[in-house]
Amino acid sequence: MLKAERQRSILERLERSRAVEVLELERQLGVSAFTIRRDLDELAAEGHLLRVHGGAVPRSPTNPSFERRAGEHLDSKRRVAAAALSLLEPDATVIIDGGSTALLLAESIPTEQTGTFLTHSPTVAVALGRLERSEVVCIPGTLDRRAMVCVGARTVEAYQGLHADLCFMGVWSAHAEHGLSERFHAEAEVRRALLSAADRIVGLCTADKLGTLATFPIGPASALTHMAVDPETPPGLLEPFAELGVQLLS
Image (tube, rainbow, N blue to C red):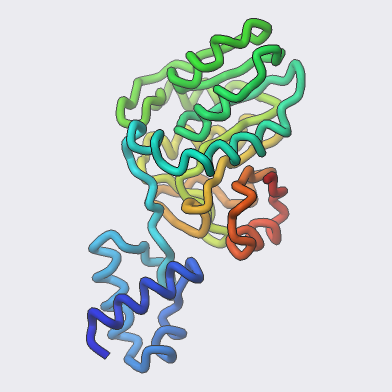
């Protein structure tokens, strides 16, 4: 089997199963473990996957630009937002993360909602401004224009110093075995703080985020109490998270 054909087969298997193992590929493709490791290293260098111990997992396809993300998978993101809103209760203290799905969620909250909302996203804060019966608290920090969120020590310290009833957290990558992760260090630091800032942590997850991995770890997938997903998500992508005890909302 030629290298190009072999590597294409590896990527196809990775897309189907969201993980490949060196020993299994060695058996299936009839080549040495050394050859498989070299293929995985080359595919990782080209940005197609991330290497983990004994194999590889998909790299998150998430676009780093907020503007680009805002126009992608809109219908799916709206369904995720609708699922997440089922947990919203009157007079709760709620953290809303940044990101395109979080913005859609904020825009979907009924205008009569009561409570206190905290966010480090200027765009989310503006969307929440129409809720006349709710208080909106803007968490300070340094604006990351790429993601349109505040990051840095002040943002992290602010979240470490409070406790909310509920947190709607954007998800860059979620893998049942390898945990939650993020492509950018500053955002990873903020999201790591979010995991301990509320009683319930709801991950906002479109299907393309599931079973993938990014560079900077945030925490175990089991740190999520709930995961809001598109009802059309393939069950095979969700079962590993349900087995961890994460409650699925769809």
